[in-house]
Structure formats: structure tokens, C-alpha cells
Length: 127
Image (cartoon, rainbow, N blue to C red; front, side, top):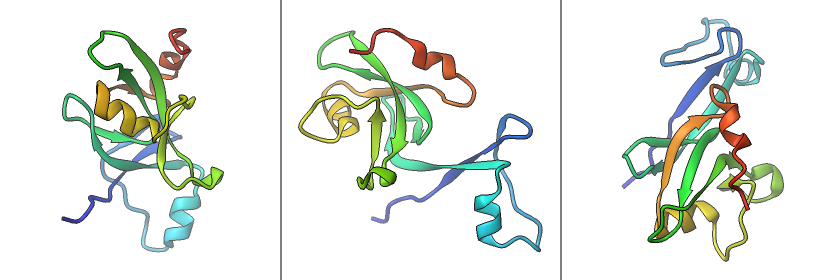
């Protein structure tokens, strides 16, 4: 089975996600992706505990095993750190990828994103 590759796009001018966007016929792909107006966020290939697609830039609740306890983190892509994978930020101390860890033990739940709900990251329950 092939991995699903998809993106969503944040429009900096209108401060909203746009469902359908296509540059005019004079735009090259590099011009579209380097344009400061649009921020493209990649799908991680994962779904949260409610079946919702998880994208970079999402803010998620990460649940611990057999507990109502959770931490709140942002989904980031870490290629600039020589780690070409999606990860939680701030990182947690575990022996594996922290997204994989929480998916295995308690699940994650998308509760917002960094563009529409940055205040969610101000939660003080982070260790």
C-alpha cells in the first residue's frame, strides 16, 4: 500500500486554511512553495484517536497509558535537525519517536493548530 501524500495550505493574507488553491499559469512550483503568502503543511500519514488527519503544525493532546493524564505538543517536521521525521515539540525523553510512543500507549488527539489556536501551547501541564 502506498503512503498518502497530501498537504493543507495556510493563507497568511486571509489568515485561514484554504481547501483548494492553484497558482496562476505563470507560476512555477518553486515560486508557489517559496511565496510568503502560503504555508504548506504536510500530512503525517497518521490519524488521531478520533480518526482526524494529523498534519505538521497541529497541536495535539498526547495521552499516557491507562490514564486521563496528557501533555500538549505541536507536530513538527525535523529535517532541519538532521532527523527527517515528524516529531513532537517540545520533545519528550523516550527511547523512540515521541509520536510513535504516544500512538502506541495512549493515543493523540488533534485539538487545534499553531495558526488558529497558538494559545493552546501555553498550557502549563508540560513536564
